[in-house]
Image 1 (tube, rainbow, N blue to C red):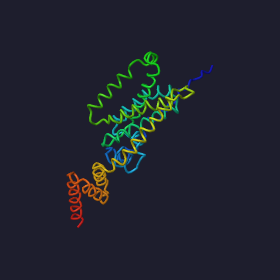
Image 2: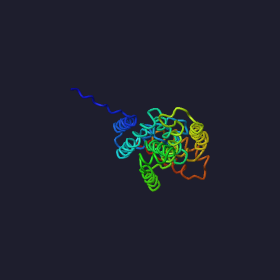
Image 3: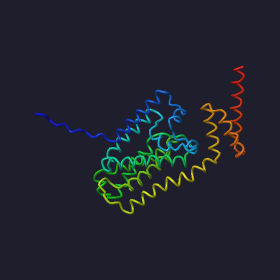
Length: 279
């Protein structure tokens, strides 16, 4: 007698985990210390590069992680929330929610946080946002199936994000909002007809991202932070001519900012020392 074995489905969330692990291993191969410069080269969210229209950085940070603990925590969270969300919404809707939340999270971080940022947590918070959307559809049914665990986890993670300066809480909260709107815009798995509310959520999501970039990109590109960060990281990357040109422009535009002359002097001193050593 031959027993048929039921194949377990391969979830897209697990494929995303495999991709994240693969990218992490590639980064480790090139730089086992996972330096800031390596993260930037692989596509981390860094505001001056996004302002220079490297818009792929709205997506690539979702696949990068700063260390093994960061990767492990996000992989577990993606497994925990991704599987159920994918079963409820279906594969296509799941991907729209995941990437919609991830992009919204990166955009929110670009607007409100000038630090370099990596990680899938904005997209993962978007999966929590999708669960909150399901809760609004039928609170009693949702509680009977899932209980109140989602709210406890959300509260703990948001609170921890506020007390830990290393966590990009703006990306988390923006991702949460993006996931909620994305889930609302696509509807649940077997929904056939879209209502005006679904179309309204879709419009709200698109307008939120589009308006944020339309006003945020030129605003940041004319800020002191743009010139300082571009000058600083260009120097770190060995692009000395670009660094000095950018910093001197920043010094002219923002004469009250004493960071520019001090960094320019530091770079020029280093150039002199290198020239003396070479002679």
